[in-house]
Length: 452
Image (cartoon, rainbow, N blue to C red; front, side, top):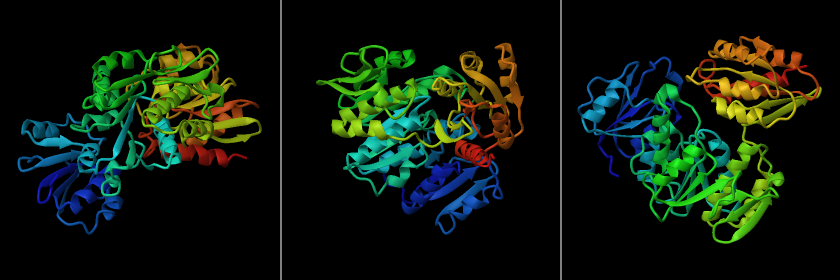
């Protein structure tokens, strides 16, 4: 892919944007960088780009004249229905994302693509650990926080790129084709961006659109939408299920053993031996097993990692126990379904800290299920009032409105009793109060550690 002297418009100065600009500069492209934020707001980021050649900036507004652009590379956070993006499309200017650019420039590594509403990061991290333990040259990249473009020039045909893929990233692929793809599940999310569930599902389904019969697609049989989508898959299909004994797939038998029944029947490990708790993590583990098995990873390596793998930071992460009260950081729960899975993981009474940026989600199902073991709700952020109104309709009595995380943690600890679980599982994005869910989770942990 020759980009020397080509005029490339880069839209969005996020982490992937910075890496992409640096790589385009190495390739000799003439880069126009655009971001809706102004120069002052982006001052720290712009320092990272000092000294680059052939880069000009359009900051604080979107460009009006796009006629002389050869190609546009759009960051995942940029909606593709913006007027100037539509104008680019109408002018037949190619629009791709960082994942697609990295794929075209890569030196033929094995790509593993993982998507779904919930469980992507845990599954990606788990798969990455399995391949590392198998001594593969492994890169854990994508939506997990490591730009794929950073592997270009480093990874080769012997490397494995375990790639977490969001719907935003998949919207802007064209030729990208993973050797193994995974679709974990679908629940309502990002409707403020995709507008309808149909659009959201269609974006996710792009992960397998370029696969053929030489590739593999690992699919959650228990998710009805995933099962229906499987009819469009051209790759070799491997189903996993914790509810049914699927033929040619991975399932849980009557003794709670995870069985691989693809080529030969292998009783791999008992569910109770898994290091990660909850049915949602059982599904994540089954998906990881499928990926590793079709990739010819040694069974003993798979089993060993499943027994020892620690929870990913901000995903039901144990923080500490204080006077018999357990504190858990699940800041990555940015939609109601993810919080449902977290709440259902605990048998003890839960004090749930929730709320954040409004993604037009509905909280009724979460609150209905939460009635079983959530004794109190501590609410903050943009959606606090919305959740409060829904929770009152569901019969919740103990509802506490707080202004920030410090007050949320202190209030939770005051009302907690021995053996209670204080669970930060917001069911919302973080951007109303924080730069990212990681910053939110760290704020929670800092305040927990400050408790007397």
